[in-house]
Every structure is written in C-alpha cells, then in structure tokens.
Length: 423
RNA sequence: UCCCUGGUAGCUCAGCUGGUUAGAGCACCUGACUGUUAAUCAGGGGGUCGUUGGUUCAAGUCCAACCCGGGGAGCCA
Image 1: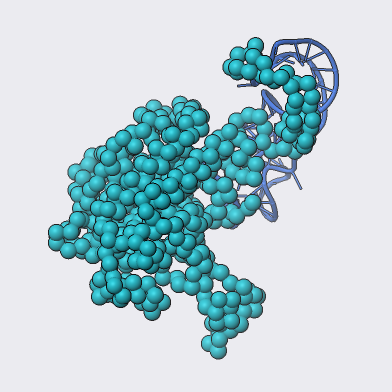
Image 2: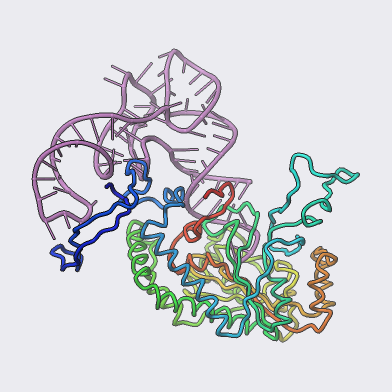
C-alpha cells in the first residue's frame, strides 16, 4: 500500500494519545481498494501552487483548498434557488443555443455542424447557413436576459441560472469564456426594487455560507492570512475573510448615482495627485481604478452605482427623464445599476428595462441593433407592455468574493479560458 | 488584444558579467529507527534547462520568433 491509495479499514476508535487530534483508529484489518503509484501521482502531500493545481484540474478537488471552495460553490448555488423560490420567482430555463447575435453582451461562439473544410456556399461566396443544422447562423448564448424578460411578462417573476458563453479574448483573473449567470427579471419592478433584490440576494447567500460552511470558511480564512503575511504591509487587507463577509452582511450597500460618483472621483486624492491612469469626467465609463477607489478607499463597502450615461450602456436600458432616479442635467442617462464589490469590481449589472416601444426602437436604431432579428423580443412591448427590471449576477465572481480566492479559474471546476479547454 | 514578468529534476526554486561531468530542499526508491502526524538518520535513482532558429571556439546563460503560465489593463458577469 502506498501514499494516496484508497483503503477500507476495520478497527476500533479510541482516544488518541497524539496531540492535535481527539480520536484515532486502531486498525485490525486493511483492504486496499485502489493502490496509487506515488511516483506518478501529481499531487504531493505538501503545499502546491494554485497554478500547478490548475494544470491538474482533474485531481485538484482532492486538496483541502479546492474541496472547501466547491462545497461553498454548492452552498451558493443552492442558496440562489432558495432565495428566489422564497420570493416567488420561477426558475426559467433560457436557451443555450440562439440564432440571434444581437444580445449585445459580447462576442459569441458559433454552433454549427457544417464541415469547416467545405461548407455550402451562396452564389456570392458566403456560407449558406440555411444548410446548417438550425437553418440559420446559430451561437452559444451570452445572456438569458431577453428570454427572461419574456418570462417576466408572463410569470411575473422569473430567474434564469445557467451556463453563459463569451468568446472575448479576455485574459484576467475575473473573466471566463464559460461561466454561470443568474438573471432575475420581474414585472412591475423599478430600479429601486432591482437594487433591493440584488442586495437581498447577496446578503442571503453570504448568510447561508456563514451558516452552513463555517469550517470551510475558517480554513480559507487561515489560508488567506498566510498568503497575506507574505505581502508587504501596505497591500494587506485590514479584515479577514469571515470578518469581511459579516461586515458586508451587516451593513447596507452604498447607493450613489454615476454623477455623484464622478464628483467624488474628481475631488479624490488620487485624481488631484494625477494618480489615475484614465481621465475622470462626466460621460466616460468608470475604469477599474475608479471603481476600486470608490469601493475600497472611499466607502469601504459594496457600492451600487446607478444612472449611467446612455451612450456607454446597453440598448434595452430605460431612458431617464427629469425626476427619475439617476437623471442628470449633464446628459442622457439610463436606469442602470452596477453592484461593485471590494477586490472584484462589478459583480452585478442590471437595469430597469425600456418598456416603451417607440423609445426602445429609437434607441436600437441609434445603437445599430437590428430590430428585425429581435422581433420576438419587441413583441413584449407591443402586446401589453409593463415596467420591469432585472440584473445579471456572475456566479463565479460571487464565489470568488465568498471564498477570498484571487483567480476566477479557481472557483469553477473546469475553467474555460482562451487557449484552455482541457479536462 | 496591449503592457509587465516568468518557463531549469515529480514539486518549489538557485545557477553572478557565456567556460569542463547543471545544484539545493521537498517528493520518490533501499535500509535503519520510530506513538508517528511537515518524523528522523544513512545511501540511491532522477534533468535533450518551454520550442525552433541564430551569434560564438564554447549557450541554462546572449539575440530573434513562436508556444505556455502568472500579474495588470481593456471588454464584461
């Protein structure tokens, strides 16, 4: 029998004489169920780098770090259903394959059964997609939101929770090509309700993990402290993992408008000392450095930013009028909201949707979104339209926060990223 | 995709300005010892130095291209 072998032992549990353990087993019989060649087995009984374990993703669950992470991931996933079910939301399955490329959330993966070496061609030399499996160009979904809106106008409250795909060449610690997204959508809900829902969900999930996964959290907390101890003093965070979760749970998220956020940034030290790399002025999108300043330096807690300029946001977001939350004299804004978390940045992006057909169509034209392809979506506005709102929460980003891990590839079992789809 | 950084034994890494047979700790194998739990002691095996090409009498070391990892940025969840 060698290290890492799987065994079945028969014996007696007795009080242990050793330190650091209460009981031990005095074995009378050992059966080797599966031996293991310790020479060939990649995971050694020692501390491995996360990079190395990532290359052995098929075995990394066997380490205490990853088993803790994936137990917590389960708690979060289960808690999502628990929260929405308790609040009257219907779990709605949006499609994974879609024939529309106008969802507007990013580059898409093509789905095809055509032979790439010699696809059927039209007279003008372009590929004849009518010959393809679905009779049209089809792709993997980047968002279930449009379908969730259909569900909301029927069921009242609905949420999707499924895999989502982005073919963006993003190489960061918080992007995946395949990730799991939660997208609630509710009829008769405005942006305030949307924010309440988002904050309520985050807090429910944190509370659930604190309740059900304390052992794993303590392990990850200790792991994090060890890691922090090797960093220079200035980069260490003042709170441990569990303290951080409790803090977020017990304090209201800060809610500010984009216009106020810009004002805060303009008055901030880093701006006055010209330490920001990107310009701060009304109309530009908030960069990571700006979000970090607001969340980690200025407010020191999760922040919800609302009322972004229309030109930097998606076509389906509701245009603000005077008196609306987030309206600004400085330019056209929409009823959008981003929830920003410390260390991660945007964890939720949502909005009240544009329910007025004429306004929506004008906006689509302005942003070159092909209305013909989305005729079915526009039907929600044609036939008994209703004010409604929703958001998208990235499951892995949330798990990142709850586990205190630094790389999104470590909180999904088999990460799919540019140049990497093994296992 | 851009910027920075790295790729040397199974793992973590050392290898100064190019110079003979490339090192350490851990892991592994053999033996000894042991109420051990990061055991200990002695001995042993193990590397085409990311790939390809170039410079040179000589390349792990210098140059170029490419591949892959890590950090940051953009796109966003």
